[in-house]
Length: 332
Ligand code: TYM
Image 1 (cartoon, helix red, strand yellow):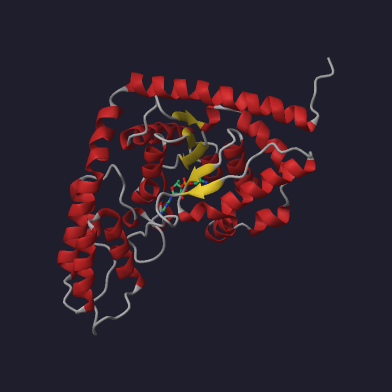
Image 2: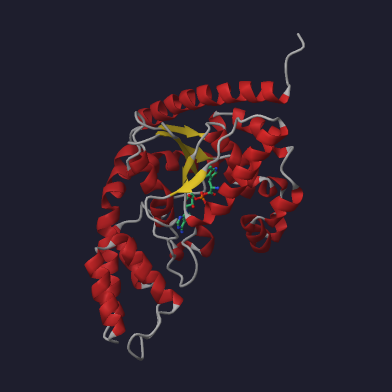
């Protein structure tokens, strides 16, 4: 059976981008594959969270994984830092990751541009740690959103380079996975780009947002004064709202508003109201379970302990083999 590995950073509440880009696929994949889903707390250290925030956000992501429907009996749910073997593998893999290729990574360049005061080495070698998450369990399928595609390419490069260096056929190639024909990019509400916390709170709909908050955010989403001639191309802000509708609404609802748009008869108030209602319905099951699971501290503890044990067993086997391949054998 193929192995699936994926993770989400513990940087706060999960939004619809995380859900439709990654989490909803995790839930489907657990019935078909051997799955490892983790909370990437080590990756989130690049932005220097306070210890209190880090702890709270890790717990929050565990809760939202469970609320979305990841079943700890079917999948291994674990916290990345509970499996320190990944840090050891990261050290080994850093020896054959090159400065030039790391500097060329799009996500690194974006981070340098958006936060020039915190260009730390962890940020530079972020793709190496991500590759190690996957290689640690010999993952071949990685459910992620479109923004992670380049990291998967780098994962294949690092794994293949290791195999070549040591003349082994050890690490397998991993590929980004989505059930739809393309990797998903969920747009935000601020009129441009993908949904993400770095674009501000108003850009994101969180899984834990109440129906009132969802309605308010959608009604305030950036739009324009409407089309002025039939069959006009949609500006980005309007296309984004249509893309969101495509994600949460029925196809005939989208077709209906598309038709109105093309005839210059669309009323954005009605369009947004429909989008908000469909979004409230789509997120309802997860939202209601978040509240229930948050109150069950024993369950949360049991899940992460069981996950840590399963992930550690898998990681320890890999590290024993990797040390041997490298030649790190005990002299005593
Ligand atoms: P992160 O924490 O930024 O995002 C987690 C997942 O959510 C997806 N995502 C989106 N998908 C579609 N539209 C959006 N607007 C959107 N926003 C976020 C991301 O593509 C991702 O799948 N580097 C990873 C975490 C990671 C990881 C790994 C993933 C660490 N190690 C190993 C897979 C395998 C990250 O920062 O994701």
